[in-house]
Image (cartoon, rainbow, N blue to C red; front, side, top):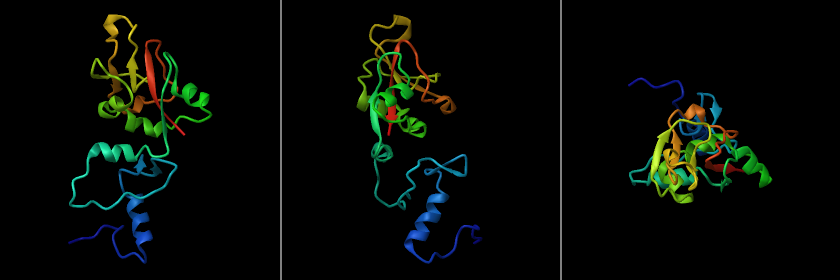
Length: 159
């Protein structure tokens, strides 16, 4: 069987882990940049089933998840906490199950398109905007810390 250029023997467990981290899609974006400023390796897959929700929560360690005020951007929300918005953590928050942990989402979740997401539509919004509904954006490239909408409250990753 042919081996990839990155396979081989490593002088220590740390070197193995570092190599694995650099080549794991869970730890890099755009093929060459770490997804987080916290460089850590992901564990080897095991035979035990691990809850995906638990794995997502683990990616939020060290992050202060804050619900913004109506019409506020995550940049503004985090700045008011003396922190900065961590844009790559929006990927983790941009999922219905995670949003339901922090917001009521009494109208359920809807896939949408907008730079103001993940967010919940405020209760006093016009009926056609689905008040109480949590919104996540399908094109993940739209995720942004500076997006806002007058009828939503953002779910923000601050650190």
